[in-house]
Length: 357
Image (cartoon, rainbow, N blue to C red; front, side, top):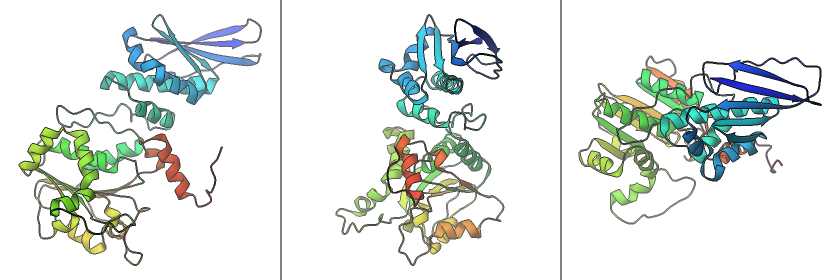
């Protein structure tokens, strides 16, 4: 397939360049030498299946309107062709965005608003091969799960290759979600027999006082984020069945003492709120055939001021141990709402006091 680029100049003079590439919508090389002032670039993209235009553009053109407004280009479709017009850089970026959207639509069957936001955010910055990475093979009825950034891909690779992995990064980088997805994939492949999800029962800067109900009702609010991640990956009936069979266990960190877990995938979430003693206790629960993933954000420690985080301590202590890998995720790996990245940056920058217009 080809992309036809039409460059419009003053008066009626123009040049047509065809960039032939391996992919239907990949813009690889463009060289243009001209003696007149460049007014506009236009790219014409062939679409193999015209019926894919509707889900690609979205309801009421919602998806493509987001591309137009973000990149400052015009995008339209006629006779199975997508026409993009604007400045050179904007057309390049828009072409890359549409290529990635088509790839995701082809492999997933649907596009969502967060897909467009995430691709727009990372276009031109993602490592080669991130979008083409194989999906994490979770249970059959679940949606496909892909690492969305270079940092997330490195995190998934580390979990695949190492027995003990620390994922350190800000909120929204997928530390817990991807770890849970990898655990479910390992269970599907029968590489493990049990998933254990663990979280410290630490209040986030406020005292909740006495909580009514039995012990399960008391600890449930602390474990809710782990339950939410699980239910995003497996359906309720599967989760209920696995819980009843003790294949999936979600427990507070304090309940790990005295246990040895063989053939298990063990995840510690919010690890920055574990004390040094708790971290040592947790890490030494690993039995034969088990894997541990520790996820945390060292900028959101809710321990008393005099108490050092076990996560910070362990990062230093374990750095030279064979089989251990620590992966740092950054603001560029955030895949929640587009504002989350800016919020994290605002809190990390002490000079931020007013909104930038």
